[in-house]
Image (cartoon, rainbow, N blue to C red):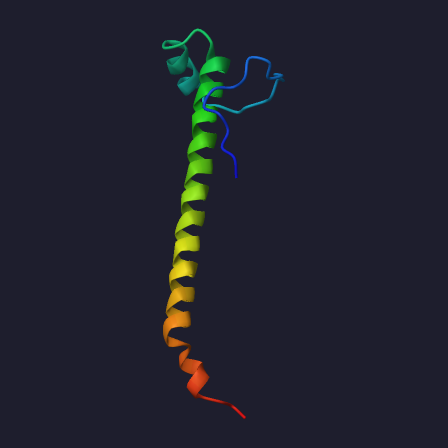
Length: 86
């Protein structure tokens, strides 16, 4: 799964969206930035990249566990192999 770049492309199309944010938080944020939209986009981009990386990491762990289990099964077989229900 490809990861999104950490910075949006310059030609990325923008559209207005509605967000519901705490008035106090918005007021505080505006003391640190004069472009709240750009700040939110940067933060959201970082969040999305982190979530994608976390998903890839979880998948790699699951793949490693499955590979280890398959190797164990190939080496010693299954406990159920010795117990036929027939």
